[in-house]
Amino acid sequence: MEKQHHIQLLPSDIGETVFLPGDVSRAKIIADHFDSAELVVSSRQYNTFTGMYKGVKVSVTSTGIGGAAAAIAIEELVKIGAKNLIRIGTGGMIQTWLPRPAVLVITGAVRGDGTTREYFPPEFPALADFHMVESMLASAEELEIEVHAGYEWSHDAFYAGSTLSKLDIMEIEKPWIDAGVLIVSQEASTVFTLATARKCRGGVILASAGCHQYPDESATPEEMTTAISNATRISLETAVKLHQLDHGS
Amino acid sequence: MNKQAQHRQHHINLLPGEAAPTILVPGDPGRVKLFAEQMDEAWKVAEKREYITYTGKKDGVLISCTSCGLGPSPTAIGVEELIRIGAKNIIRVGTCGALQPFMKAGDIIIATGAVRGERCAEEFISIDYPAIADYRIVRASIDACERLGLTYHLGLVRTHDAFYLESPWAHGDYKARLQKWVDLGVLAVENECATMLVIASMQGVRAGTILLSSDPIFGERENDPDLEKHKRDLVRVGIETAKILHKKGLD
Image 1: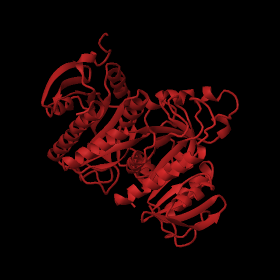
Image 2 (image 1 turned 90 degrees about the vertical axis):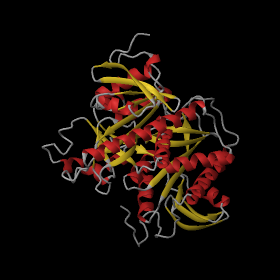
Image 3 (image 1 turned 45 degrees about the vertical axis):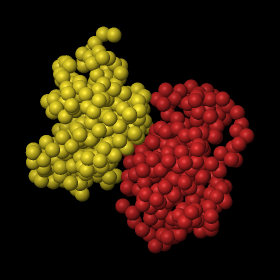
Image 4 (image 1 turned 90 degrees about the horizontal axis):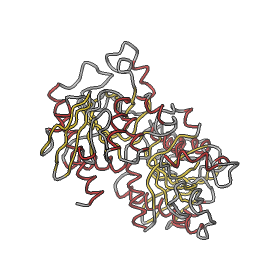
């Protein structure tokens, strides 16, 4: 098999579980949480590290921002044998009761993006794999990390739906706030629908510094570093649990 | 936002307190009787149109069953009104057409989510919003099937409006119409799941769906000689699920 077009990887290059940060530099930060890790390849915004964690081979591939880039990574990773795709990302919360910072286990996504509209009919739901959700919640409990579970509004235009937008985001986001959606980000709908269609597991865990309603009351960078680290630790334990589920312990 | 109303709901004809926190919802009003028969004690609390409600006790746990009729429209009414009288867990127990060739008549399907092929829930919220079963109800349903030794499948179902377009008795080439959902791994086709999941989840109420494969569409088609037993099994799974939710403090 030739190397995949964008990620430049072969089947032997990755574990069954691949973590998917958006931020290119976060791939190394996540890999630093493995027991061992090596940079496999750096191609465009796709940086891949592979290593071991508690005896399980795991990888991390940065996807860049947005559904379009994430879909490319997922399609190519699945072709070379990825079974569990876990996005570790960030987003802006839209429920004022959530703590700042917070770690959120995403169970489903509002399909506000264009990539999944091109792939699937609009009625096809974006939902996380059930075992992924259960494993993340159990891991969080074991690690004594507070998490909240719920939906993400996935969309394409950062400068239309963020605190840096010039538009009235409270008006844009009102239907999702009213329906209890927890957070705004960009990739969960793509991860979930593509994973479902390609018969593998998709999961998303997000760290968030703050809430769109209170743009001036976000967590500090240091607090966010800890939140991202906590999301990573939960994801690693989730990889171990899924490995046990598929292969025994 | 649960607005607890002190007056009888317009269609289900119930007051707060007349239904248990966990309510099983069949489409068929006749199936409420199957529920009542399997409880240690059960009493009818309301009957109006297709909405019949029994409340009862099984092994000390209070559980209700409210039929909501066939299709998204009466289901949306029933679910909305059950939420207004304080429902905590709303669980559809229904029949469906199984889509995957490996599924057999009598198998149980636990929906993790639903394709929103119906129109009713779109009046509440954009089609972008997902129809997802609450993971705690999914887990309780899995444990219930395992406890009862029943074969179950976990995954997506497709909800739609027009029964006579997608069923073994449908017009024309219904298999061709359904093929894209088969390819996407959808397990079954039915008429109420997505409506219930969307309306409940957007109000923060737990909902789930447990289905009986009564009419396999792509497997071996045959009349299930044990259909009545299998319908009782379906209701047993619902009751067991409610008991598990109670034990976990989720009612």
